[in-house]
Structure formats: C-alpha cells, structure tokens
Length: 189
Image 1 (cartoon, one colour):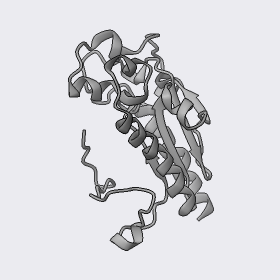
Image 2: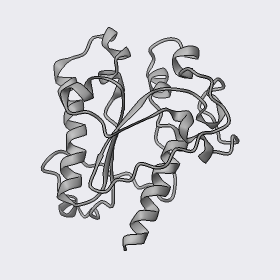
Image 3: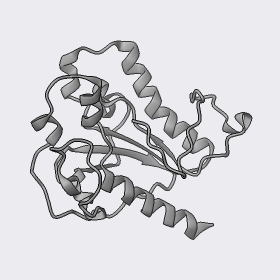
Image 4: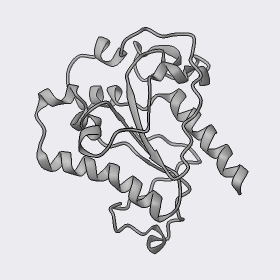
C-alpha cells in the first residue's frame, strides 16, 4: 500500500549493495528502514513453499540495510516477524508486540480492516535488527490487548490484500520509532 504524505518521497531506484544515492541525485539517508517480505521468512509462511532465490533476495534486502547504514554512517532498522531471518542472518537486537506501542495512538485512527483492533491492541511477536545508533523506543502500551494476532483470527484466504493486512507495520510502533530517532537526530545536529 502506497501512502501519500508531504514528508514521504518515493524514489524509483534499485537499491543493492553498490547503490550510491548521490550518483542518482538522492540525498544521503538520515535513517534506513527495510521490511523484507515476511511471507517468505515467517514460520507461518513455510507451509506455502518458498523459492530459494526469493528467500535469498529477502535475506539480501535485510543485509543491504546494514551495509548501507554502515556506509552512510546512519541508523538502520530491519523489521520482520520471528522466522528464518534469525537463522540465516543473525539474532535480532529487539522484540516487541504491537500492543506495547498502542499508547502512541488515539484510537481514532483509520483502520485498514473492520476487525483490526484500536490502539494496535494485538500480539504478534516482531523482531528488530538494528545498528549505527538506531534507538529502540520505550514501550508505551495502549489500553487494549486482545491477546492474539487479529490477522490470523479474522482474515481468511491468501490474497495479496490479506497478506498485506497481515504484514502491516504497527502504527504505534512506527510513530514511536520516528519520535525516538527524530528527536535523537535533532539533538546531535
């Protein structure tokens, strides 16, 4: 899903190990995020069969975030659920469940599905690999925790939309990461 926002600028550029943003007129990054396809690496995705080349591409996407973060001396973060990335790359630096950052939400946010709980009030153990000064935000739980992952409980099928809904980055976590790392960046500037 492509979000439109004045502070989001989409750049159509192939990013790989040799990528140099300056040669494409792209500013040097302040922070790097990677979200490799979780369907390929999650435990639940194993039952759908995985192509070795697709798996390798997903691993390289995660590793590329670290390589570029080190090259440009900026913080980086990779998000993925518990799964193959820990086995085929390295153990994560942090774990969290979405409800643990629900306190960053008001409960009035637009939902992507009617069964999606307010305040990201669900569990789905998620891993964070990070480095170069990335700040993992303090947990700030919201008032709701349904104690299960809503995506598995209420979404059937395996359509592209269902996969997308199941793989959404929790909104409260995204806000918390922005606040923790944006404030840090301003403090050292």
